[in-house]
View 1 (cartoon, rainbow, N blue to C red):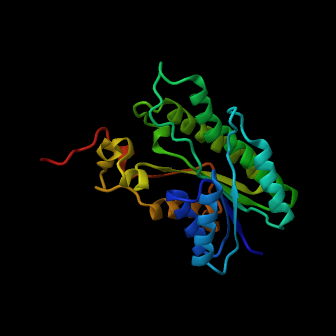
View 2 (tube, rainbow, N blue to C red):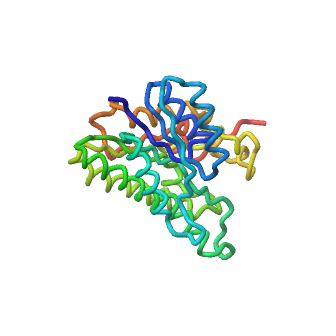
View 3 (tube, rainbow, N blue to C red):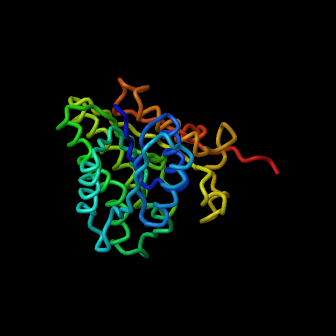
Length: 262
């Protein structure tokens, strides 16, 4: 029986890298994106690169305009997969609201709520929908959170994001505990700075951030994160649940970064 992975927010950057990794290992792939055009481009690219695997895509906003979680959209996606005979055995929760430049006293509460609902509550809704189908069929599986080392280390003007990533770790552990008896493993990968298009374009001056200065002297690329996600998502980690894997060049172990001498 073929194995299928569902990756949220998988049309660019880390999510697309994760999709390519699983496809290269023979997994059928389902991806989501906020937009129809970006979804279609990513699906076409994956099908062209990996013609032997099945690729499905969905335009799915995790949070509605009124800031409520899009339960209807999530259930509609899984119902459509059911109709197509697709059983998701691995769920990678990659989509996120980054909450950049959300400042206390300046941003409305609705901005905070949107980040929490995108990064935590919608993740629960997706995990519940996937796990319900596996348990009904007596199948085990895996859920992987793409989290962040900001779950442990706060950064400026990112209160909602930091809070959401800490909360998502608690959600990961609780799901691992409750779903273990069904053979469903739940783990988290914690990246640091990644060489995304935001980093390449120096969005929000991220290339000047101190988290670029790691003990290994470099930050992660997409393959680094994808390899870690694949480890948790595949049978390579069949006896591992409730665990965290930090992929940040050693950034979390240092009290302060050592800057290069000028």
